[in-house]
Image (cartoon, rainbow, N blue to C red; front, side):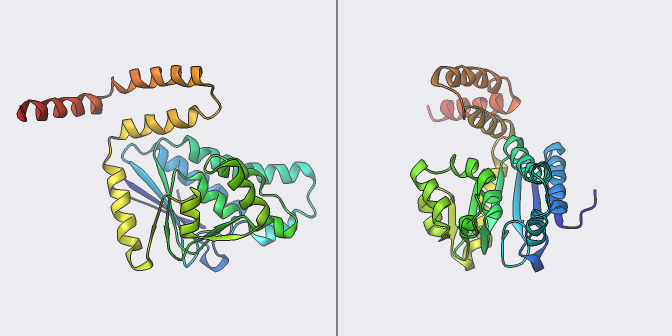
Length: 258
């Protein structure tokens, strides 16, 4: 399909989704969120896709909600505001349920809903220029939906600090907190990201997909239920062609090495 506020491309096993509102710092409005959900569905349906990279056009990843939408919320009733919020929550869930790993590629600001969007990805790769945070409290607002994502990335105490301080954190501080996976100096960022994405795309697709699904499925489980889910995931993984091929290669190397 055609898009107005995002760019969607696929090169081999790599799908790339770019938020394309550089003049608005890639702020999230209704149309962009709708297009994002469509691009996620499109990439999930393409069997060739092995990894999805999500980035922002221009100098920033995403500055959060569009100001025009925030002004309209003054006039909306609770049901209208819930429907607006639910659209973004659905995008977060689509990312969580996507069969392939989704990687946030972050330059510049990833703030408020934009920080939540990055955190909804499975991995975050950041340039030194990147800045993360939830400044909603500074205007009397609550980072409500994104709180569910942050809570799954960092400790309870660290999550509360990020939420109530309203501060913005440098990329390396975000990595130390557990929000970001990797940070590169600006001049090394593109090469580092491409190497990371290529390595991830080269992993056996079925094993990666099953691992992502199982890990997130365990979120609300007790130990016994999580172990049983692991039993089922283990059995399914043994039935994939990639597993059989990998075992054969491993056994052949073992025989060759005596």
